[in-house]
Image (cartoon, one colour):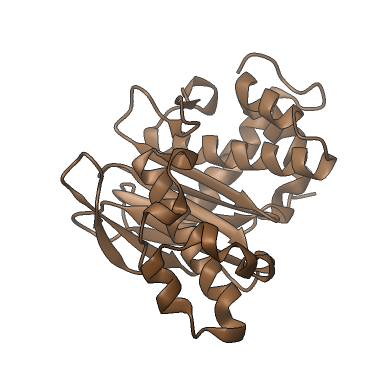
Length: 257
């Protein structure tokens, strides 16, 4: 960390990481080691009173991205999302958050140089999803279910020809089906590192399917995740051995008086 939020002190930032680490370990029980591939989802509201500490914990580049957000609520959301991402990666790597190199590549994808971990981040409408994998590239996408209402008019920008034919009879369920397709494609594009450089209409993304990883020869699997009543999420990962572990992070324990 280069500079800290003036409203946070080092002790409270350390306490935030300790509390988060305890919640993460509680969400991923049963083994002394971290799963080879895992994803964690959490609600920001439960941590909003730790916002100053979250801002102090993130790196300078992350803080600059936060400050570029116009709306205060968006700034808060980004600060918490970046802090959750940094703390999750710090737990997995065994590094302190301030010592962790969490950077963006030329396509804007997060990277953890100097570690064996691959990672991905998504956030939407008060929720955050973080994925990490030792097995290879990973991508996660999270969207608000409310977004489904606007997607039918974007069908030609989302679907391949075969997907349009498959969804032709969806009727009132078209928006929800398109949203699930959207998060699968976003997760896949994040995992391949292509991001916005490849149009959604160039790839098919059926649910729970194995697809070839471009230029790699390996196959990547896209899974829909249980993201609660307000969100839809998908994970794209190699995970050749054990299946990925997916968990919702419980809110932190109330502070003792």
